[in-house]
Length: 341
Image (cartoon, rainbow, N blue to C red; front, side):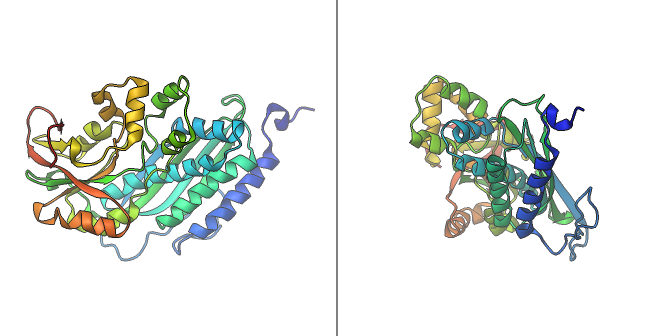
């Protein structure tokens, strides 16, 4: 008799891992979660107190940063970066949701692998739940799939989906950002979870010490507390992910305007110099691929500009005035290398 296990899928192990994930997620539950009444979908009541509630949803993954985490865990007995990518998948999704002024409500994860390795994959779940606790978000459900025909050895992929809620009248509009608005950048922890296909080509040909690896594998900054602190006094928020400052800022700025970014107004982390040098990457390409040390951008009235970085520093975020908004000058974003703001 043939069995599913002979094809590489262990149902019993999958059930055990699912029970672990469900148990781990209990620390993230909110009052709006409706018990375990239905085994096929998570149930979440719309919170009270909204006049015209709008749901904000986002989905994202961690990309090939996962490969580095797996290689470190398997070949070098260094599983800590598996927890990092669990944190990353939450941060990449939640950081997008909060750009609308929404409060995150719940999150679901998807982990696909050749075979479940409890000792490895539980670290990912721990990273997910820890990050969700930090941003007061419920782990409402998820999926773990064993697909030996799709993945080899200990390879796996990781993605997440999140939902937030915002009062309709509070949602940012493109015309909220105006000429002369000041641009404030909140620093990143490093490349976050973008550009790792390029980074891995460099790692394949370069001897990397533990210090460089540690910088490359820093967890993505979770900006939930920062944005909650200032969202009512800013005119727009952009999460700087793949595409860097050059491609993410224009997503929220009217086409009649240009954003002038002063390159030397913040200290670009040394890891980006390492990437550029060892990968022979042009400066323009660096700004199109990486966040270059700025993970979140705020647009504010000039009267608020000096106040906001000070307030963010009080709660542990470094932020700098990095530019301003001017009438359209042929490019949506201009990186000015000449002087500081």
